[in-house]
Length: 444
Ligand SMILES: Cc1cc2nc3c(=O)[nH]c(=O)nc-3n(C[C@H](O)[C@H](O)[C@H](O)COP(=O)(O)OP(=O)(O)OC[C@H]3O[C@@H](n4cnc5c(N)ncnc54)[C@H](O)[C@@H]3O)c2cc1C
Image (cartoon, rainbow, N blue to C red; front, side):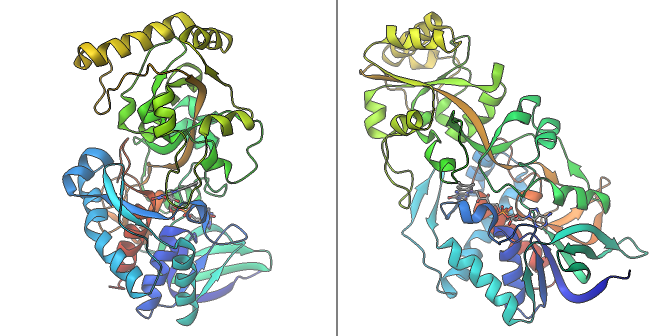
């Protein structure tokens, strides 16, 4: 049976932040765009997100805190003002400027932005088609990508396009790829993102000649408490222990293993590499009041994170003294005696010489000595991956020899290298590279 064929200027695979931003940008400039989405509805992880579009304040902060390829980090930094101008010009609601980690940004109406992009696509004669798998990219005799074979419940469709952007959101939903590219412990890591992003973009791009950069094992995620029920979407946010940067993280031997103050997302990467990929998160009454009971961003509700964790099956204790913490730690397979030795040594160092701490602490060095004390077993959960297809600063997919695969682009979490083990905004990464890919495809 021969395929039904349709033609367009731009084919986008994946209707999340990167894909729809690219599609809307190109459509507004006159492109006929087809967006194919594997899930029954568009939005991907972007629709699960808090919509905080933020990034680093300068190229130097991007290099330091993003920690990836400086040239790719620079693309995010340089394109961010264009992204903001475009949102403002379209009347997308934007909140007040806010500081986020080591950068700044704004909470945007992410749903209005992405639905608006879909409307731009349709107004220019294109379509956003859900429930559609992309089975293979199609190449011409010169090796250029000229479209894709897609499969929809109503039948197979060959989409012919001058340019194709892969934007399927990374590979975090694939236990096999997580174990292969990140760490063997990552196979069992909890997913706190859309369940469709299982590496399709990488597979499609690699089959078309692109290089998958497996040497970037970084990922963005958060430490979460245990829960037998992870079905409720909001648990992604509710069980995350964002305040761990003010706490201590102890491994099963009762020892610190990272600079917690670098951020919960960074500690998540370190915790994955600890025995049994878990840690005991310890904090005191001061941290609890100031950080563990406050809203993370304006759209989230303030809640007591220990109370919520325990309500959903987390293993934790609110203790009147450190001896109770030690007993709890022992019961949970951590070295209780060493844990309280570490806590006491930390408190002592904050008074007599914080520079002696090993590992050091870059930021807050206040003692954790006010009862009640809080100890919670935490595990890494993944939001999106940093490895993926090798791209250049124009979002062109590259072969292993550095030559571009003609007609093929990757954006968002399908592209490798913009971040290392740091983090400077997932939505900004996706939107700026979506715009960059559309521009490189000719829609400036
Ligand atoms: C709970 C939560 C909160 C977050 N909060 C923030 C925040 O406030 N700020 C921030 O910067 N980042 C945040 N993020 C991260 C942010 O959402 C992502 O970094 C961003 O959405 C990535 O964009 P993307 O386009 O690469 O992937 P996505 O937005 O996930 O889009 C990928 C799309 O591709 C689709 N797809 C997958 N496979 C295929 C296939 N084979 N064919 C076709 N389509 C496919 C998916 O279904 C999805 O629709 C958050 C994420 C989560 C989960």
